[in-house]
Image (cartoon, rainbow, N blue to C red; front, side, top):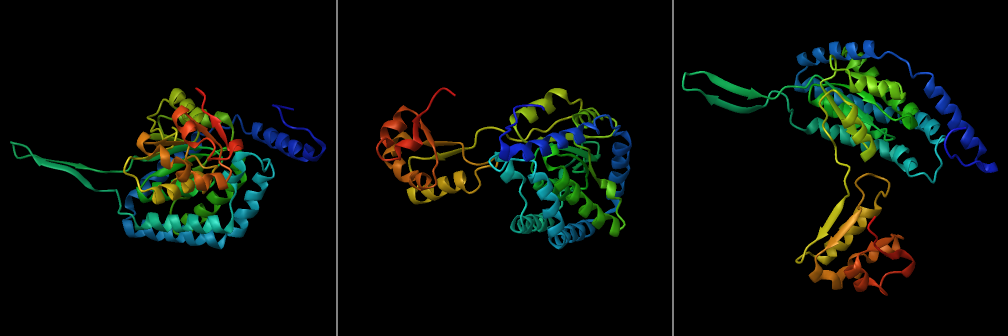
Length: 335
């Protein structure tokens, strides 16, 4: 047994499922991904002939198909959830429900409404010799995206890549393999039905070896984007031989200014922290102008009702001590 898995009697089933999943993952470790990469490159070239109208039509069909196949997606998602303890913070990030799938479909439709980034004239000038030089936006080609247990990212990445005329190769976390496989199957079915090479969307197996192959597929992949924890982003940046665009993994701050509206601030602070505490952009750090410390207890009042634990620096602690539940207030440390 690997790691420090809990083995209480009521958790043995969870431990065994997790261990078996890890064993299944290892079986895929030596897969050669070169054919998959090559197919993605070929597929990316077919996107050149698609105009904005055709791309928007595909996005709408993917959104509709997501809703139509919600039950199937949720069933596959439950297979992943069975391998994670409900107390684990990843559980909520991984969870797909009918409501969340409706929101995802709505987001895909929103992408459809965005102006196409392809073919935009970014710069145009005429040289003294009469030569006209034009800078025009074009697709990258093939984009590799590495992310963790967030199956909604599969939809996000595909829709944005398709809108911008790029093929994508996805490397999701092993925790979401059933969910991602079902999602990709549905999207590729829509592509195939419309005569589009389904390899414009490729999902790699969940082994670490596939990650390293993707990070070094210089002949096939034009860009790598990691989305997830700081450790994931650092790993990708340090091991990739392909250009990497880093996504944010810093602390999420909210600043309440000297002239801030405390009614708006109170609502914003509470929403930013508690709407979904497991997501990467949930509020981490509240910064309050020192002239507004007298309003601090009011600004975080809703947070106390939601059981938010505060780590306050000296000034903030003195201001709020006795006004915020003592069991939810601690002095900040260097960490």
